[in-house]
Length: 155
Image (tube, rainbow, N blue to C red; front, top):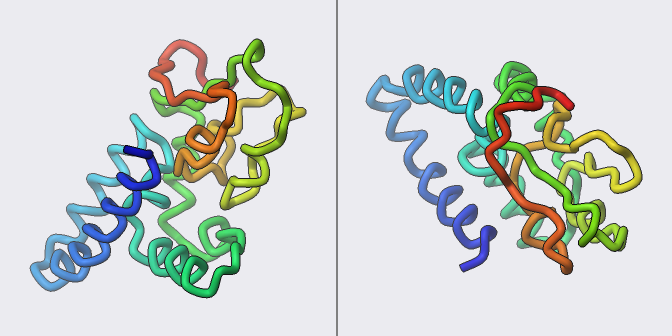
């Protein structure tokens, strides 16, 4: 199964779970848990769990218009602390230079537009990367992978 299929299932699940948690008074615990989990996976909350991001993304699919997720960078107060965790999280997106053909597919598919194939910086340590792994699944050469990397912080 593709990464996208798992991500869509996660989005739909949490789209219905978050209002239930709000109703039960457990939303604060859910948000604190998401913040703590961002130490391990960075800003994955924004693409795998966030209900507003899910609605925004499904709206783009329904209208067949691909729009960058600007609200994730500027409009969401929860994205600031989670975005800063990208630099210190344990998992990173790695590019295998030998397999990369610089076709720019990863850059074109990135929903927030942070992937710079020419740059040396790892895009997953940037604030705006939402760890949706679209770049990893769309790479035709398999040059990108999501790996455990606890040694190099903020490379």
